[in-house]
Length: 133
Image (cartoon, rainbow, N blue to C red; front, side):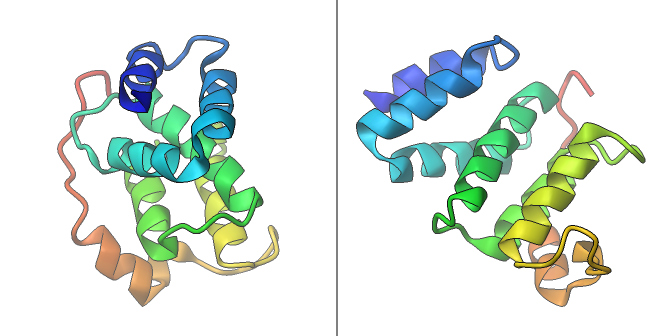
């Protein structure tokens, strides 16, 4: 049931209500099914950047709520999936997620891409480029 609803939301990830609709589903159905679905979006190499950005926004909420997440896998996925342009909101989102999951200060010198645990996860992330990149 929830998968069809999430599929519909992720079919139009830039819709202004997308994040709110996912949050409502999480409240109604529980956060674990939504988390698992969102992680599957980040795992999928054929999703669009917009879908990855929406998934990362949900991961950000989950990390702020201290929900259970596979820390190093999530960090690897957001760094692999989100555009890394200097100063972009996406890079900032990846860093925000990483620093929160690692419980580091936002101004920390922690480098997720130098963390051997993240690097090991990155090596297993499929890198196929989505069509809209």
